[in-house]
Length: 149
Image 1 (cartoon, one colour):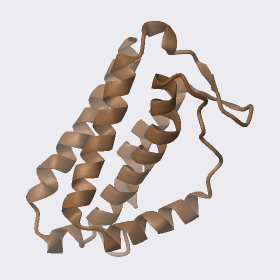
Image 2 (cartoon, rainbow, N blue to C red):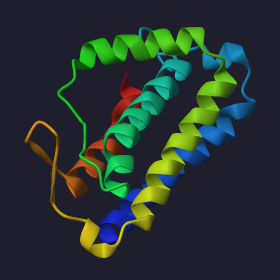
Image 3 (cartoon, rainbow, N blue to C red):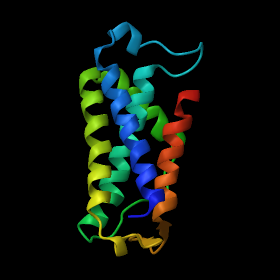
């Protein structure tokens, strides 16, 4: 595994640990935003968990199982709206558990890949491809900037 991938996985672990430390917060805190007009903490964690779940089920797990990647072009605004709705109707503890679980699934599967599995282009069923390390960087970037919501 490259140092770049190890660094990204370390960052992914930091997110999981951070979410775990917030598990004890009161519901009032989870439903507050860090700044007026911004997303609530619960919405942010829900949003990240749902992206992790999508990326895991449609790409990372498929690669591990040697199946075709099923990522597709998404309407990001619609996805974000649904993530907020999901956060509003789901227990905080469930969101926390799933956020940690999906983040660890991503990390564990990637760590299980053989070195030659880090092919730069991975083809999807639509005949398009994504660039594996760069896609991890996108997830890392989402984790880093999502607090600006």
